[in-house]
Image 1 (cartoon, helix red, strand yellow):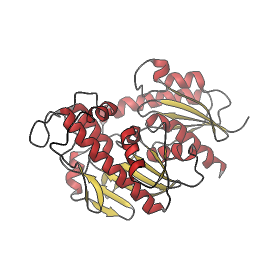
Image 2: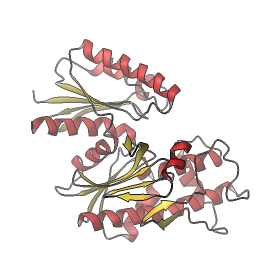
Image 3: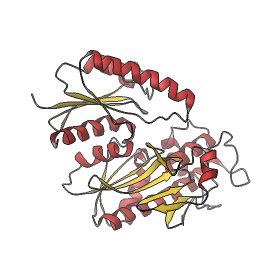
Image 4: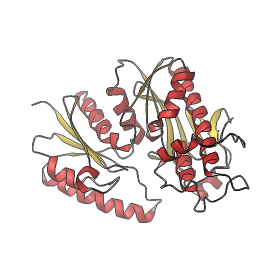
Length: 328
């Protein structure tokens, strides 16, 4: 039996994967056994599928102490899971701060390419501290699996936004107070009367909207395409732009702006890496309309990660650990 690494994702769509000598042996999401939609836990999976022949377990999550109630709850869930893993005598590798890297690994290693760039876009990934401010990753570009560009945002913290001031560059990093593409879909999904995680419904609704009041939610400012300040996560999502708009029209504007931004990011990826083989991952790339728009408008060999959402982090972290342990 070869080297077997298990990956556990405790972000949205809790999941467990087993990688055997670099190949996917097993993958399942917690909701399939718990019957709880988008179940973040992986306790039942760990009890059932972790055996004595597992060499190590990676754990990746995406929560932060800056959301105290959630942090306490999720920490307890993680500790309970770690207790199960340790009871089986399996070493634990903490991949908590490698959210986008795990997305990238899942796309890259399962793609048909030997040499490729990777673009990750989602709501938010791992938390990053810079100049005493706290940011979360929202967009990442990798040359193969070497990170060469990241967009960090403070959008989730009003106090951090005020401290930041104007967006700025720091080498290959771009720091801003603008909302991510994933969070924009969450906000507009609430506006349209859906659950905040039902971005697919918002994408579908956009087909019934009209460009009667065209609004560019993404604009090229500060040398990068970023979301306008009109869209920010807020508790009251009943009104935007100073006037009530039909839900379908708001969805239309969001979808078209998102497609434009995605095209910009793929072109940026090709420009920075000089590689037309591009793998994409992160929850945004479940948007099949945007993916088609990329193919139609960009000269690119595009591979879309079929597990672009957080469930795929289990595979990404395990396969990343497999190749990293081989090189030690």
